[in-house]
Amino acid sequence: KVYVVGEVGIQEELDLIGVPHFGGPEDGGKQPDMGPGGALPHDSDVGAVIVGFDRNINYYKIQYAQLCINENPGCEFIATDTDAVTHL
Image (cartoon, rainbow, N blue to C red):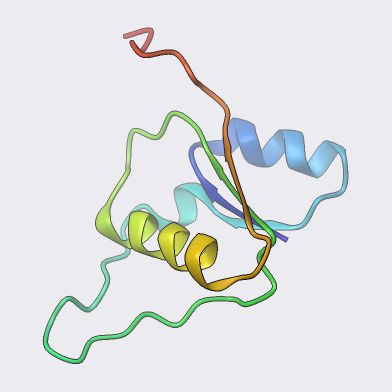
């Protein structure tokens, strides 16, 4: 299972090869509880975080991805756009 920080194109590619995923544009409006004692539960079955261009990046996505990478043994971090300058 993959957590996506990016846009729908990443999800479409994962669908083509049958890889289950979540996140992406659907998490664009989410906000983590950043108050005292706030905790964000995460899916322990996530085996990879894929990050690409994301016009709706937010703290929720960053925190969720970080939790998966740090807390799930063997979770891979995959960057799709390794260029230093975006195309915009």
